[in-house]
Image (tube, rainbow over all chains, first blue to last red; front, side, top):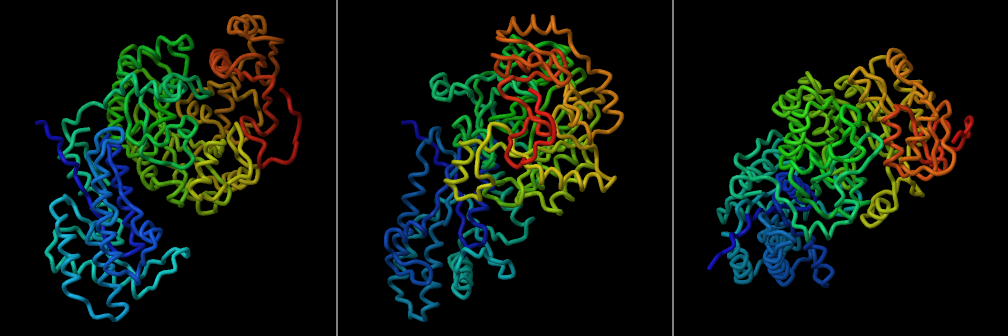
Length: 202
Length: 392
């Protein structure tokens, strides 16, 4: 049987308005400029809200599970040829991202975590670990202004950032930190690009 | 970012006949005669997503990965075999409507076509327009062509809204500097466009252009094509709508032009500035404009004096008998007029008009689409005063 090679998967996670989508769009542009068909997932938060689920500091175990499961499904769906075989999938919010948001929401609400429930969700996310070839984690820079259209709770945003990096450290998940420094961002884009160029054909 | 090309990447795939059949016919037709030259577009698809891109007009904006429509050899054969192609005379443009010629997967094919044209000993002007990265290695290749009159125009808008301009303008700025620094046989032009009032015509934007103009053999500034398809894209994506109306020609409001000209005239440190692409290209090569813009005298008020003299010397009113014979052979109906500004015809589409224009080095206008005084090639939007005659 002839097997189709799995696309390279690049995930990004991090708290809101830290440049995740911009970073993936830059990688997407570079890859396409090299003739490589790419698919990018996204808009998970908006779709969860559209499904009537709580978001941001109101996240629950159920909404978290929905986001993880939908993210997994999206990333699988993104591998379908469109119209050519997709060689790289860019996952805007890798699965652990939802966990970080949930942990932050619990802390923001000053709730005592339910360890079995947390563990169940963590297990669900961890099943996806082998699928990511590159994981980028953006780092919050609180000195940068946020666009007026976003009415964020600053404490929650910082908590998500904290839990993002705590989770990655605790579970020893290989990743690359991406700060607000343009040179650092350029290196992240280049790292992703080189990996893809070395493993794909145009 | 300095991204080296990965070795041994294969050539850009050629789309199947079936897929080419699914493209808009105008896009599948690889040769189009435009004002700046006979345009060869054998590669389509672009990841750069510039909101104002003319790819919207070809229903091709969603094709993000470049693909070829034919081999490089066939593209060259189509170009030089085109009935409107004249060796050493017809200006040529490569890939100026459906992709960026300097994308890593595209540029080897651009170089192949340039090499093939150069090896035929052709001296035609060839224009390449990019906003992507150009490296010193690319410059070495561009310098290696010994016959072609090659110009690389670098589009730089300085538009900061990433939804309209996803490509960081610093990429183009760096490319321009690299091109200028390494130029030996080719020339490079700062293509300052699209200028949109309120979006990228601030004092800081103009200062940025002045600074970049020092790193180019010429600078050309132009407005925005705001056709229906582009307006629809802006609306669908919630982008700020620059104008209430759309137009066939580029929109360059009088106020915006005046702000730029005031800055240009008050500061002697600008590089040479032009309103028309061919004027800038010709100046960069030390030649008279090949579009005969000298006939539209008010366009020349910002040109360097030596360039005006050069254009004036080359600008010869053609014999009406010869013009009429050529125009008739191309299908012109009605009276063929040769006035002090232009040849004026009826019944000819743009390609045969440009064929006449480039052949005679004299403007060729359609009687039904008059160019108004001080608004040559521009939409009426942003111009309220009728400052002078409105010859056909």
